[in-house]
Image (cartoon, rainbow, N blue to C red):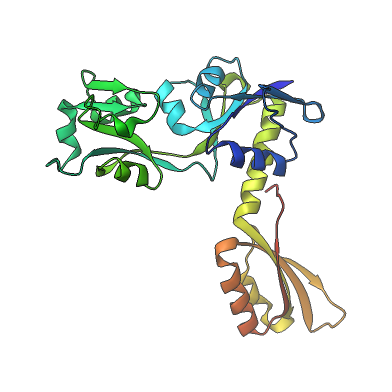
Length: 280
């Protein structure tokens, strides 16, 4: 039975649970429980702080885990990122008081900087002797309290920084999102490979849709150009020899435009449906 770590709270918790449910896993967090066993899939899930997950996976205590790539970078964990996930997007940005005259990130290297991610800050500035104030949370209040001159914090909308009287300075220092990580020795474990394949299948399903339509035989070459599919479309004969049925996967963002093109070409009975999961 493999061990997989999941975020115990925060913005990564709900989308992680939804993803695993869609992939057929039974991970349930009771109020005071720290783990959940899914016997049918040979997995024990552990609910841990997102910042601690890289350490557990990196040391091989946990086989795989879902957390932010910023937490993995901050911990210098040897855990290997195997899949990026489409949630938990955030930026690490520097911010200074609105009334300050700072214009570039380089000016901050000699200031007191408050942050929860000191290693990411040090790596960005490539300076080991920076004066950092390391905090667990509420970084934005540190300037008003007089313990820092600037902050480097995780930013989603920037509203929290604005409320604290701070403005973002320069480009982001680091971009993050959720990802599936695995211990280097566990990547080829059959159960780890299974969870990777299931999540990959769900990610494909989230990006594509299935389109089905009837096309005149004389127009099939043009229709195939519109819907080439991932390899090639499925084409089936109909009772009417002048028509064929076509089925193909199309990118979700282009799906409605493709329907328009097929209709204008002369295709009929065009259907668009969601894909629950896929193996490509």
